[in-house]
Image (tube, rainbow, N blue to C red):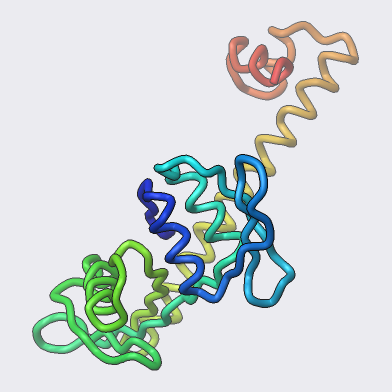
Length: 187
């Protein structure tokens, strides 16, 4: 996620106009800006300082955000970070790779490091990449299974309650505490 700070209105205007956005309307307390394709627009209140939320929303609406794809390749002293179409930098750890890439992009292309969106893919030896993806997929599937099981348990608890069973009986059937039954039927 791109981190956005509060900005002066003139800096927001300069940034957007530098991205080929254009002013569509400048009446009343808001300025309406449009993207170069003409299909997207955002309104900005003309305060001297624009809040981070408004800046973020405006960028999302009218500026095409480029995600820089990075391939991280292991070497003896850390990771080489190959930024597609831009260049190569390095980092001692994969955990610090995004920060290093953003710093590199800011020096090379200008702007603030936080304004760059990066997607890093680690190039791993042998079957490790497939094993790591399988592990991530298994965790996602387990999380979804847990959500599905909780929904099923709530449904059954409510149906048991509707059929006339007491909280204590529902607890015995579902093998949970009476307090948990109360949570299930009231959630």
